[in-house]
Structure formats: structure tokens, C-alpha cells
Image 1 (cartoon, rainbow, N blue to C red):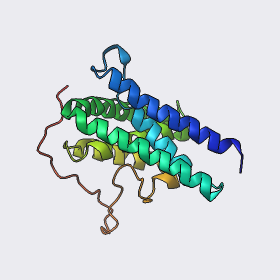
Image 2: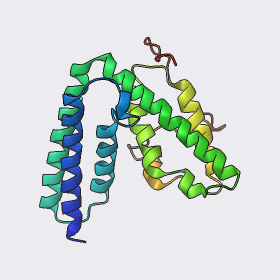
Image 3: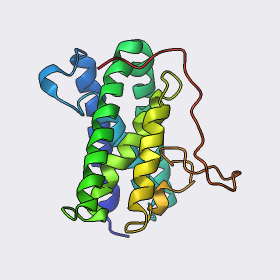
Image 4: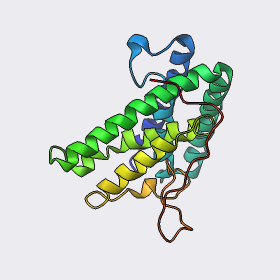
Length: 198
């Protein structure tokens, strides 16, 4: 294993915690910060999770890194809980933004203006999933779920869905129902809290 890999994870862990501290110090709406500001901790969270999944170094190194990851994840959860619905509204805006960006990328791929692999930009697609999982209990995301599933299907003939997105517990969005022979998409139960308006 590349000895630099544990150091890379440690660096990402520092960025993860720093991103939480940053939004804690500046909890105001996106404003000039732009899209991705509120969701930055979730971007770091899935990046580190993927790196830990592929870690093949010593067991002791892995345990230390996982312990630190869990500590920072609990810090993020405490922040989210303390903020209430306002922060989730900001995350929803980021989810909507990245979903539209993914939609545009798939359209460009179909027009031959972008490679299908690039259109599925794993970092963007995985972030969509992280935000989906965070918000699905508070909002009705059935429209977003359906659109993402459709976009995934439209890219699959040219760029198969990576294994990291296939039923491993980290799969961002529900895929095709395993129990349905027709392969229908599972639906998200309508939530009591409406999504913020445009």
C-alpha cells in the first residue's frame, strides 16, 4: 500500500472537521458563498468513507482513522440537529442544484458534447446521494429520486453504474427494486414537511 494513503485520509479528515467549523462560524444562508457551501461537510464525509472502504493498510491504522471519522461524523450530526430545519433547507437547495447539474451533464453526453464517464462525475453523483439520505426523512423527494434514477438509466448503456453505487449500504439513491420483476423504482413516502419553494 502507498504509505502516503493514510496521510491523505488524515488530511481529508482535517478538511472534514474544518468544513463543519466553517459553517458553524458562518451559519447564514448561502448568499455569496454559493452552492456547495452548506453541503461541504457531506462532500468530505462520503469522500473519506470511500477511501476507508478501499483502505488496505494495517489494521491499527484503519481503526484509528475510522475512530476519527466517526468522531467527526458525530460532530456533524450534532451540528445538524442543533441547527434545525434552516440548515436542511440550505442542503435541499444544494441537492436541487447538483441534481440539475447532473441532468445537464447527461443531456450533454447524449448530444456527444461530453463523455458518459465524465457526465456521471462520481463526486457529484455521490454527493447527491449523501444529501438525499440526509433529507429523505424530512422532505418529499420522490421527484428528485425519479429523475436521478432515470438519468442513471440513461447513462448506464455507455457508462455502467460503478460498484460503489450498487447496493453496498452506501448506495445514494434507491435503485430498482430487487423484489420487483418489472424493475420499477421504489418510491419515497411523502413527508409531512414540504420542500422549500423556488
